[in-house]
Amino acid sequence: MTKDPVSVWPLVIVVGVLIAFVMAGLRAKAREGADYGFGGRYIGRIGGGAAIASNWMSAASFLGMAGLLYLQGYFALAYVIGWTGGYVLLLVLMSGQIRRFGKYTTPDFVGDRYASPAARLIAAIVSITISIIYCVAQFKGIGMVFAWLMGSDYTTGLLVGGGAVVSYVVICGMLGVARNQQMQYFVLIVSFIVPLMFLAYRLGYFWLIPQFGYGEGVQDLAREFRIDFASPFASGSLFQWCALCFTLMVGTAGLPHVLSRFYVLPNIRDARWSLVWGLFFIALIYWSAPAYAVFARLFEARGGMVHDPAVAAKMADIVVLKAAVMGGLPVWVVGILAAGAVSAAFFTVAGLLMTGAASFSHDIYYRLINPRASEARKMAIAKGSSLALAGIIMLLAVNPPALIAEITAVAFALAGNTIFPVFLMGIWWGRANRQGAIAGMLTGIVITFSAPLLGGVVPVVAEIFPVTASALCGAPIVIAVMIAVSLMTPPPPEEMRRFLAEKVHGHLD
Amino acid sequence: MKGPQERYDVNLFKPKKGYMRDEVRIILLILVGWGGATFGFQFLLRLLGDARGESLLTLRTFFTLPFHFWFTGQFLPLWFILLCVIFNIYIDRLTESHSRRRDKSYD
Image 1 (cartoon, each protein chain N blue to C red):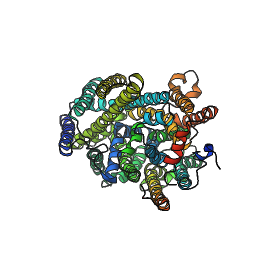
Image 2: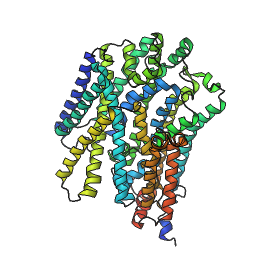
Image 3: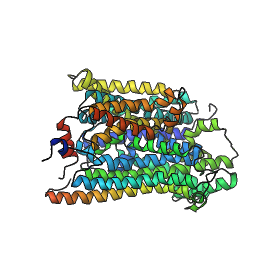
Image 4: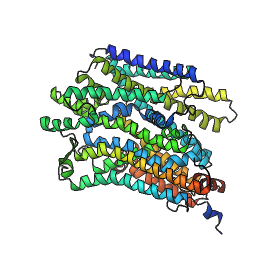
């Protein structure tokens, strides 16, 4: 990779887009005052949906998903289904109820519902861990894109890109840059779809809606090169597919930064409808990702390039960019695509670092270590911890263990094994108590990391709880543990049970 | 007279009369549609597939894609959106009718 030239124009476009976002944020702040954005201005259902989608889009959606599809074909559709189907669970099982419950963050909900500082602490640690794992995947994406932009190796790319994202977060924080998530979504979707239209046009497929035009590419691959992209269960068994898909679904419904989206809109009804819009906006990207994978395969096959699996796996995470380059797209189109990928990762990192740091400063430092801390002190702790988190993430990202989407999937597995069960039971079973929640979350943590820890000694563990897909068997076990432990210990305070019955479920009776 | 134990009982599988019972009914229906289409189809694919995984579902082309690829990659996300729309319309109506019964504007 070191021989690659510097991609000057894409680099200029990436930097330009990031600067433009900071400038736009500053202008918006000057115009609207302090209450812009989070909980401030009413943005409508479609706008709310765009905000949900922009909050969701990360390097995993933008780069990682196409990479896995490129490597695994049909099997990787489990990611497409998992990351859209999870929103159904979120909508029907949780959205209205957690909103009526009225707690903004995951540790707050867990701490209050189960009336337990210990449960709050575990939930906070889990949230921070999820942020870290999620960000490692983002940093890998940032590192690979910057390495490609600068024509350098991965480590240099990671250092420069990581430095850039941390400076971006610090600058936005210092200047109080408002996040206009509707604009962010618009930029992301345009930068993803326009290059795809160009590619479909180049290949002579139906380019107007490339999401539906890539089918011919699948057929051409099979006919010309005998590459069976669509063969089901070629890269994994039915169980592995279902386990992965289910894990991503319950993980989606348990991710802290997704759960807290329901408070941005003024009422439950709008929140529910913006979720549908959000799902639609997310699906627009996910309908397109397979097209990038198919086109990349096609360009490679036609160019006579056959990568051995190790090389293919190494470059899979930027296969979206590779496809654009192989397709001979104009350099500004490639630049836009790279800018979209970098922005998606930057916004996600910014959001997650802030959530993680706030969780540390509020749920751990303020609630447990120093309850008399002043607001300024809490703020300083939050700033310090966000830098500390960034440092930890950077170290972990130097030697990324897997593909972007796979690393992200581990965060989903953790959320699906811990936070999803405590929310589900907390909302839908009044009898669930703090002992149950604590036992359940601890079980979930053990299950999530059982494959890498115990898989070598007891191989069956790695089969039942695959590291990216442990929640199919894990979440039911955690729920069973919660039920058993709750029934063996005294019921939760009557006050809480009454609140659940009357305010959360009986608000209209 | 019910004891407080029972009065404050919240359980997905034993919903209280009124709003919660209607809500739980639609939730369970949507979940059946969600799980059936997602996992049911994969089971079917496996069940019908021969040694190489090929079957009517993979050989038939639909919207230029093999049918199973189209179903999973393109139809299922659309199906999820549809399920969410159905759920929202139903809950909107339910909330309105229960609010009217209670003589209070809905949220």
